[in-house]
Image 1: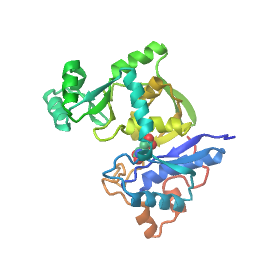
Image 2: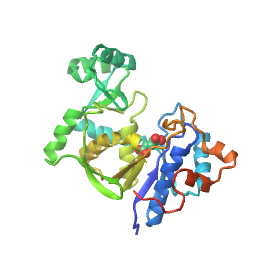
Image 3: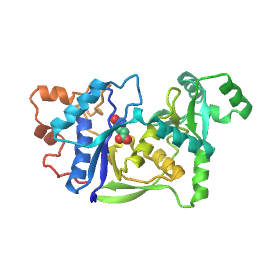
Image 4: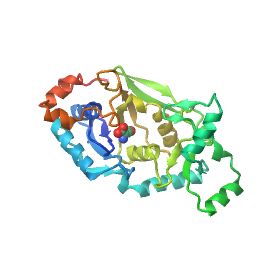
Length: 296
Ligand code: GLU
C-alpha cells in the first residue's frame, strides 16, 4: 500500500535540465520518498519539432546523477494520443469546444486594435473571434479543410460545472506547511487551446489527463504554472477526474534575478557537472541540503 503522495516530474525533452528543473525534481522526489510515496517521471514530448531522444537520455542521466530514480514505465505523452482524443470527444459531447481558425497574426491584429485588450500570463487573452462564428460559417470552413485548433469555451464550461454542483471550483494548495483552499479564477486565461492544429492535445489537456491516469495525488511544480491550475481544475470538474493537491514552488532565479530558462541559456546540470559541481553542491545551492529536509 502506498502511504505518501504520488508525485511526478514532467520535463519537456527539448533541452538539457538546469537548476530550476533540479529543484522541482528533487522536491518531488524527497516528498515521495520520505513518506513512502511514489515518484513518477513523464516526458511532455507532444512538441515533436522540439523534442529529441538525446534530450530524453540527458534527462535520465541528470536525474540519476542527482540520485533520483523513478518507477517504470516512463510515460511519454506522444505515446498516449488516444487518451487525449477520448477526452476531447467527451468535451465535444458536452458542447464546450469550438474550432478556432485564427493564426497568431490574426489574434495579435485583433488584440492590437483594442488598447484595453486583456493580457494573461501566457500572452494576449484570446479575443473570442471564432467563438462567435455561426454554425454555417464553421461548417463551411471545416468542410473546406481550413487548419484549426480546438478551444475550450470557458463560459459554457463553467455553466455546465455549475449545473452539476453549486459549489465553487477550488483546489488545495500546500503553502507554508499548511493547506489552503483556493478558489478558481478563470479570468486570466480566456478560451485556452485544448488541441493544436497538428495534434489532438495541448499542454493543458495532456497534463490534466496524465495526472489523473498516473494517479498523481500531489502536483509539485513551479509558480509560473499556478495560473494554469485554474484551467486544469475546470477540466477535472468537467470530466469528473480526480483532483490532486498542488504545491506551486518558488522559481529558482539566476544571478540577476531572472527566471532560469532553456531559452535564456541557463547553465545546465551537465555543464555544472563538467565544472566539478557535485549533487550535494546542487542541493546546497538550492537550499535542499539535507535529504528529506523539504517542507512545504
Ligand atoms: N513540462 C512542464 C515544464 O517543463 C511542466 C509541466 C507540469 O509540471 O505541469 O515546465
